[in-house]
Image 1 (cartoon, rainbow, N blue to C red):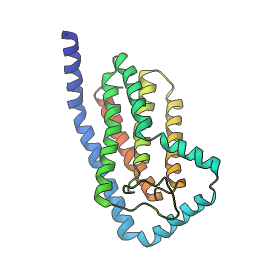
Image 2 (image 1 turned 120 degrees about the vertical axis):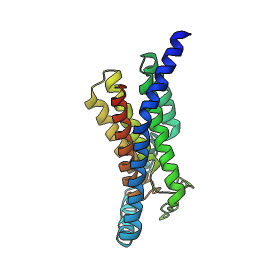
Image 3 (image 1 turned 30 degrees about the horizontal axis):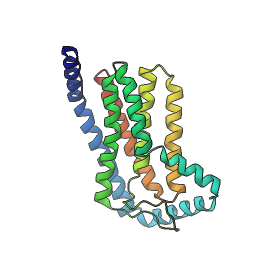
Image 4 (image 1 turned 120 degrees about the horizontal axis):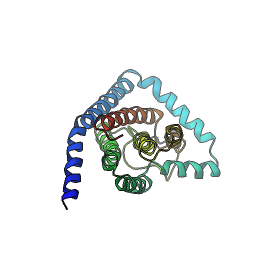
Length: 223
């Protein structure tokens, strides 16, 4: 019991030490997303919208049943039905190997991207593309892409943890994370559920959030 209490106290202290990096990442991500909206809506809107429509219509022209199935499968990789079981499984392994703080930051990384995304979608309320009929189009708002943010932040943190804690070469884990992130973003455009600037902004904000989580994790000795 004493050992459990000691571990819990150490984990709590690590979480407290991580808080400045968590808050810094959320604020920096929020600033970038707000700046993106300002420039797109008030400075570049007339030029960007026709370009974005052209991009989506071009991707639609490539559509076929095989590619539809593939892109639907890829886009699922950033949904909670996949990321949450992965978080539980990898988090459990990390805790078993006495890497509880890494597991905690992995959970914070995923939930933080959801939080930031939800706030900005509710605040800016950009409508999703509606260039063709689709049963796969979600009913919530478009900016920024939650799938893009979750993919880069969650799989980036997962790559770092697998490399550091499980001794898998970083070149392999980072490459896989990069491919997954690009694939998820592209799938959102192919399916016509996001504008290109939604995905790009999601990647940028997600990368800032990922950087803050990784930097904080290094500073508190998690990796």
